[in-house]
Image (cartoon, rainbow, N blue to C red):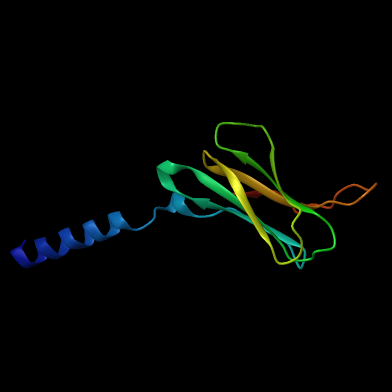
Length: 116
């Protein structure tokens, strides 16, 4: 292999090490026009969850499960239309869904989205 190809190959390998891995893909769930939620992969620093309110009529929430746990955690957004709430730093988010909170009725929720 020529010296030029070795240098080029080394540069490509080094550049790919700087890019996010497949594990950096966010988990995303939504209910059109009402609410969406996603996680932010931070590598060794853990994942954060964000829930955005698009409807503003009722409170909304994200429910999520982390790697290595079956516990369902909840992040509320009670701030109204057009707002986002972030929190819940921890291990990788594996499953997430969003719900709209209704008084005296079952909360409608999206299906569970699954990620890496």
